[in-house]
Length: 151
Length: 114
Image 1: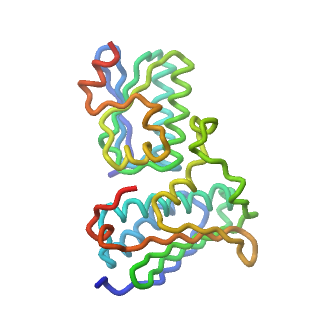
Image 2: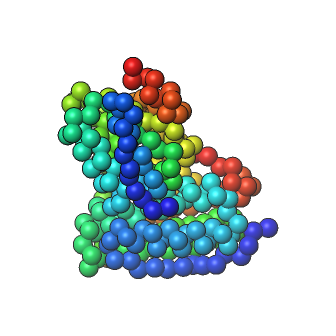
């Protein structure tokens, strides 16, 4: 039986990369409270940082006056991370496959792939006021609690 | 662990040691600057020691790919050593682990340059 969920925890962050450390600290706290293993915590942290970096860089174009929404929540055996930006939105279908030979040596384009690899569910939607809303879920099965989860 | 980069020479090999996070807005740029500085200074053999890297993200991976490409174009051999399992996993899932020359320890890495 897992510990009760502490959330949802909601943060509004200015579009600065320094805020990734704050978000990471909050996720680490949530994982500790929920009894998540260190490996699963690490991979969720990587996915969270990718999501926030995308929101800051591609969504809000590093405009510090634009904010990034972050929610950390969990029901039952799941942790859900939601990230929203105030950008123009994007077409997920237009994102190139980083595993394609022609993309292998590109210096960008792997963030969404990593999120999908390290989380169990990743969905994108359009916000009511524009921007992109990204929702990621991680199931807290017995392996993730023992910390034996690998990509 | 605070992100930092240190360098040292073993023979004609420039060893660049990375510590902490190699992530966007922090370690990624420090890593690129250190590798580019070594290439500009004329290094022909660069060994990136990653044993103290705690996290790498897509930006750090992208910078590593860019540095590898730059080094190759300049005729510099760039190799990696001592990847922690989680760092190796990040390179493996994007199939980059086969692109880089990766060695388990410094002894094997140095020997490979001969």
